[in-house]
Image 1 (tube, rainbow, N blue to C red):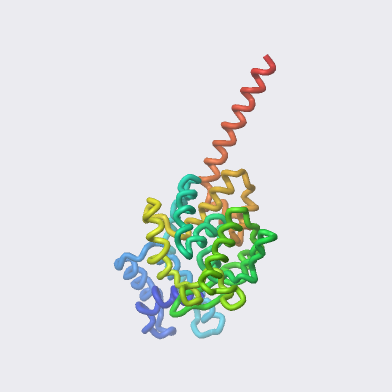
Image 2 (spheres, rainbow, N blue to C red):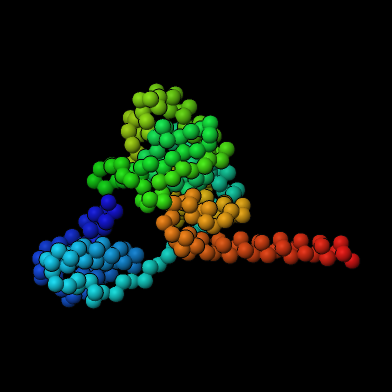
Length: 289
């Protein structure tokens, strides 16, 4: 679970030695001060308080402690990363560069479906129907100490995803590469397998595949693989797709997440819509004169 990783990174090394009954507000304030001094970001510190708060609330319910000392903490304000998706022209350049690598098709699929990296790496051929142009998100691949298939991040993430022709072609391309490598889907079920037919590790993939291709295309280092997901949302907004449809496609639990994440892109779409409306009204006005 993601919370296990957060506990291991943010909590255990700093206050894991303190007995539960001895853990008070003073220790927690010192803990947060230490994280801040060690340059943990506001988002990281926010996450650390969140996971500890859940654990201590559970301890209160079990009557292991009388109250939750996390109540003395003020969560740092989350710093939202500005979403800067790829422009269509850069997408085309990226897709062309991807054709040359055995795993390049995963980037095309990421940009054209909005699937998370773990969902792409966990994708099996039996969840793909190329003739119908759909795939089903059933699992996500989680990498902590090892690799483990888990349920999708949210129940909304477990869904049927429609594929456009570009995504279908990317999967057909990957299928041919897999067969050429001797990875027949009947024997190697995962779509994006490593050279031994096993599951991909995100860190190895980034270093050996994503970073070199990103650099070749001239995409900034600040653009991470997850931003391909935002690119899908941007492309759909530019095409006039309703935000509720985008919410469903990206597997967001609630509408507010989608609206907050893409509010500035929505403003751009609204500006374009206003300009188109003004141009339409100008044409009609000329005709009536």
